[in-house]
Length: 74
Image 1 (cartoon, rainbow, N blue to C red):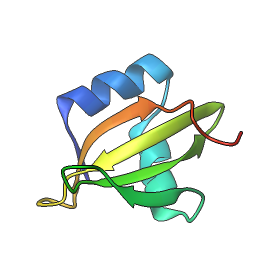
Image 2 (image 1 turned 90 degrees about the vertical axis):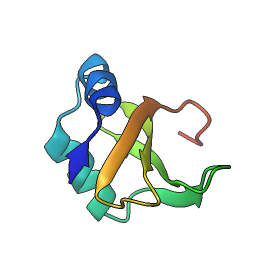
Image 3 (image 1 turned 120 degrees about the horizontal axis):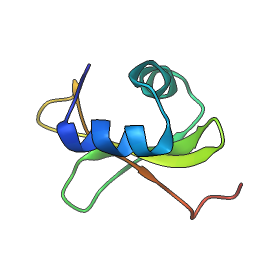
C-alpha cells in the first residue's frame, strides 16, 4: 500500500505510522462509506485519534489522505 505525500504529512502531524494505518484498514474496527466523488472512506479510531482514511477508487492501493475526524460516537 502506498501513501500520498499529503497522507504522510497528515499522519506525521497526528503521530501515526504507516503500519498503524495499514492495520486499521485491514481490520474491521471502522466503518466504510463513499465520498461524494466516489473514493472509499474508512472512519474509526487509531489509538487516541478519530480518523478518516480516504483510499483512491481508481487505485485501491493508494491512501489519498488521513485526517482527523471528530464526528464519531466516541
